[in-house]
Length: 286
Image (cartoon, rainbow, N blue to C red):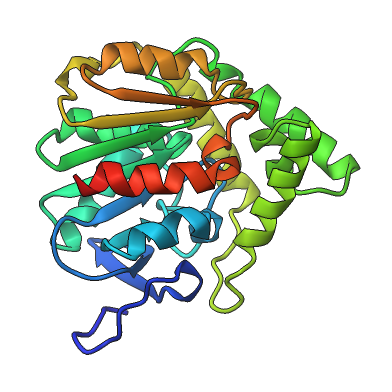
């Protein structure tokens, strides 16, 4: 479904209309919200995530001022096809999706695997991206990224035994503050009650994990080509993508800004959304 000119502006992610665009034989599912015009902000989501996994406390403040687009990678949610075996191919798909919507310049916000795909996108198409936000992530070939499989399966098992959402274990520390933040985050993801996305399949999830392992074991990318203003954020105790890799990104991307949130892990931007969302709006609004 394509947007029409007379539709009211939606600034709540819980009510963002579901749309699709067909590119060749592939169909991408996406949601968009916020006022049209100017440079859109495209969101690149994490491992195992669908359109329903973006925190509205981050998306909604952006959409109050900017045109925001979230999308499902191929093979995930309501998009067609299969998950690509490499993140480079996922970046190629993202480029095709963005160009199919008619955009020649975008801002990018990526989290975890999504920020890895975003790096591949900007390295290959540096003229496409105006401003770049990389959160909970690391560079291609970063030490420890290939251990994501063990961490993911272990925490999924722990969450199953605790009858909790795995994201509570994977994204948040297990102290009192982290537990509360994790449960609050999961509740926020349920605020959309209609037209929800299809959950990721087990086969697609495993394919994404394999692609991340390949990324972690690959030769490093030349990140000196990233000259865009770049914001990097993470927690100080990220178990999925080691926090030191955020510092590595900061050193390798000239002029980048690094923000490390204390007493938080992989999902630091969700735990500290009250601080991160205004920072994000300010950074992308310059």
